[in-house]
Image 1 (cartoon, rainbow, N blue to C red):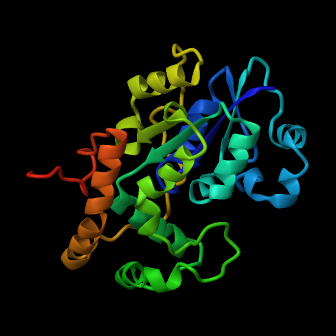
Image 2 (tube, rainbow, N blue to C red; image 1 turned 90 degrees about the vertical axis):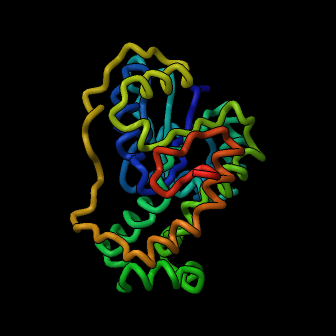
Length: 253
């Protein structure tokens, strides 16, 4: 059986960029298609067909590849995905790429607007999230969970119930993007050679075509207050330096 890893999210945090970097590596093959994402471990009927069907459906036997990866950002929000991945690939590495949650929420909002899913203005959408997040849609996760989706520790702790901490790789978008050093460190953790320089290192992917408005001062304070305990919990639990996030300020600063 091939070795596998999974990019589970977070949405709007640069996972398409990460996918492209890893897919270009001679020793790695990423699952196809990129869009729509495979989401194999969320599909009951497909999952029941087993790992052989999974590998045949999503991988093309890239010459020289010895590590297979999948990017499905919905996995981060589903315990079922974590449980199923662990059952089939217990040694898999789990990669979470995390962006400043305020910036991520704003990007998520404009993505929903651009795709015709959102009609409220930003202030209304964020403040009314609790009443809208459970609205039925055809998406695998709620398109309106802008703020909850940035409470990263909530989701990572679920994955810790199924995978040892050392198999969980947490990357910060602001530190990883454009950094050859960070890319090489990731390659080492994945067990592939780190001397390859991906041509996409300084590329940009999957940006929305809409100009992003700056939140009003009141909304900005609301967002920072909302994320303060969640960010601190993430920093402490996973020993992360989050000072690259504008929404994070260590106690006393």
